[in-house]
Image (cartoon, rainbow, N blue to C red; front, top):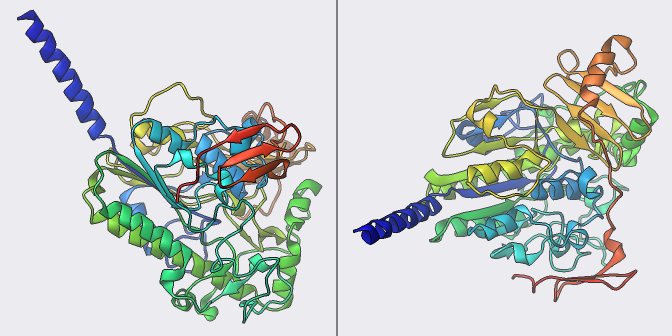
Length: 501
């Protein structure tokens, strides 16, 4: 009798564990690139922006209206999201700092899901660029559409229809702006939808969601737009007649109260802005950025349609995020790579089977995604994160939270609370903006004595230590056939697996 009772307990426990494992939620992890807060549900654009699918997802999940990137540049932002560690912790500060050869034993988000019994698949841009940042051992299946196995290859011919070694295509520049770098072009290109990489990325996700899976899955879908070049089918440009396009707010004197360190960040790539303005193309550039947002939104819609038509809809966590924002002339800057609102505020939506839809205005960081997903999916362990789970806010969006910390290169950081943005540069110079009265960040209050307590309170969240920069990619030789990195200085080799096809 006792043996039968023990056997019953063992069977009951095993059954419970099996059921718990079977009921673990799936994860649909959708990234877009360079998308600032210009989506309808965030209201960052003064005109109307056509983002019906982002808005639709916002109604399904928790919309975080004060969400910020970890770093306003692709590689450090994505490395931080996928490792849960800040750049100041890893030294991955720049696009040329690739995480894998510096941290070959790092357990990234997809790797952790794979270790936990999930089927892990992805396509498009999740980590930054190419096989060099995308070790195949993380994935059960990964479709490299945008970036190939050559670590120096920037993209497909349709997204980057030129290289340093080939002539420009007929019709280039499609923007009509003379003198811009190749990547910074925009316009309608004569290519069928099904040939575009983001369409192929979405199609991969569609096929995955239509298939039968016998275990929970983590599916990453990395859309490239609205990253430059802003190429999209004509119908997306037609959504934004030039007569209705609104240029962002800017002031000629906006940088007068900004310290020299901030002015240097603003000056980077200003030649692009000058050429665009001098050739009367700014509204057309804004139109192209908006068209690229709507193009990405349509691909999101296709993926959401596939999920909602599948058997997995009721038990899937959806995360939608952008790696950072973008300047379109604000603070006399064009591109990203600043610590101001335009470069750091991004769309973030999390929809889960366990929590209700809502709106959260607390400051949050993309650094928090990794620990949040671990908690949502019941994956435990002793892995240390710099981020904090967002589960308290998913359950009760009014729950108070620490400010968001944004880092850019070694020693430069911004602290964004519900009301304030405090910036300290590596030379000690400062900026302070009150979003209650100055949402455009036009008046730097850092020098005003009455705000000293505010600065002191926010400065407590700055990193206590900044590690030295990681080794850049040109410190290694990379062999995509064997996925191995060899350090040029000492010959040490980091071996991966043969890349998945």
